[in-house]
Image 1: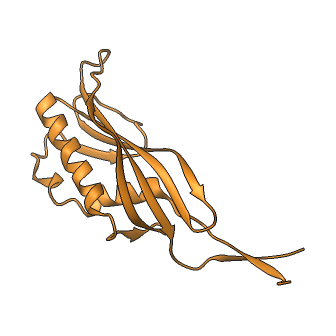
Image 2: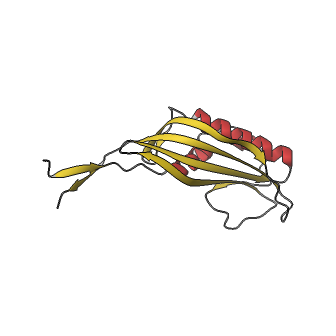
Image 3: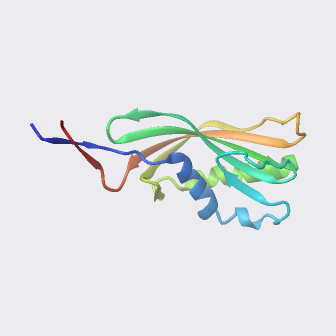
Length: 151
């Protein structure tokens, strides 16, 4: 019997999607800089006059030890429906384009499945246009595994 076992750390899928949107989505900077576009995992300092992409991991289905399937919800807010829908479409295409190509934050994205398509969900309190979509990623870890000794 070995004196240790390997623990596979699955990485941070939420941070990976933010990284994809910030660094691997050349289409997003073509929007006029005013109002600014925020890509984040929270809505701290939210201003309804600005554009936002909010990324949230809503759990995962883990197949031990190598495969993780996190669900990622993406919420896009902007000043007009057309702008909001365009940003959501670009964000979705960029995440799908990362399949098989992205490696970072401790994981490799091997598959992207659309669980909920781009859906309009108006924010009636803020009178802001909002679209949401959800994807199910399939990821495998990369990098050094932790070796945990038996006690």
